Image 1 (spheres, rainbow, N blue to C red):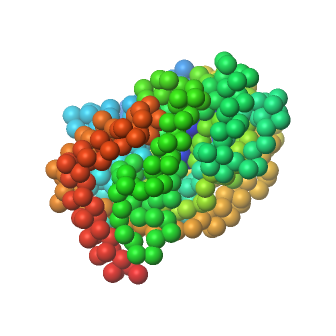
Image 2: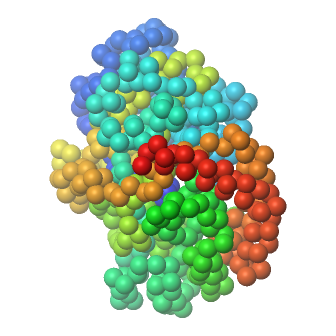
Image 3: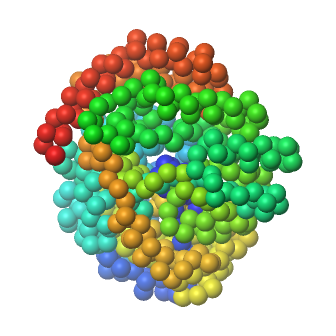
Length: 503
């Protein structure tokens, strides 16, 4: 997942993403004329509300709260009143806090209609099985016909949980591919070559130059949820259970016991000790200030076709990248950005109508994404925009807002950008566990205990904040005491049963 001005991600995005796409709204004096796939203008839509008292929808989504959000929502609500007889309240929660805060609010019954969920933030499969999300099969058939006609069927099929839809995935890049990104100004200044950068280790000579020559620059922009890129398909994202991407036997391994993890942790530790990453990385949830100021050299992000154009347009200076891995279609990439309807929503039909409009109507999609024409961007063609200085006050994570393939193009994008996306999607390699969702109901105690241990060791180990020679053995001992081996046995049993049916 690409975020317009954020790491991802995951893909998203998160990858992954962080972070995808771009956007703009049209300039018609009658924006309702731009709609597609929504209710007729001025109608009450599926259910609820009157022209004097429209339905009010509450949407919780991920991303740093934007200064001009209220300004943009005023325009959004002018439009959705006409189209759906509904208004929208958007509550944004920053990336590092989203999962924890949403867990508390959902458990407490906080009023909400629509909420962002994914494989990597507010775990989609887990909370679908817990009953936090409404089952959408009937709503999708009745009020989401535009979604079904627009979104790549692989997203809708691949995001089912136990055979049912519980959220609407964003129509975006289908495979997940990571890239090393670079501030091109620094590459050019020191004549640094990235053609041979294929791994964390191969970054080290470049980071050394930046550290020595540019003391005010952060060589590697890293946050606390960083995880080294390794050759695994995970049973649960960011949990130490996986099969190798190259697996033939589908053996579930504890990644803490693999040579690949040990090598990666040693590399990140060297980065930390050399000062290539911030000494406060283990508590850093955002490095947006580095991106805005240009005081960073490299990082790793989920990529997509033409991503360099997007990053460059968003940051206001050139960014280039090189692949860090191959494009695989994982469960978590299919589920990398989704909108669910709360099980407690008072307006589920209207919420689905809104999601249908969001994913099919270029005006609404781009208004929410890029803001207001003349304030945040200007159009430089029928289907292309250029950011204005006001864009810094409204920089939404594009990947999180639905169908990106109805977005306008950024300056410099080729006319065939979305065709390039489709080709990229078609070229993705299915990961070994694509379609498998781990059922944790038999191991809830062990999972809770393992998660507690993970909270103690994961961040400091993955960010290089502690010596892996000392802390990895301690972590392995505690993970085993918490029941990681029991989790792995249960996962292996389920994988074997799944393969028996799906081979």
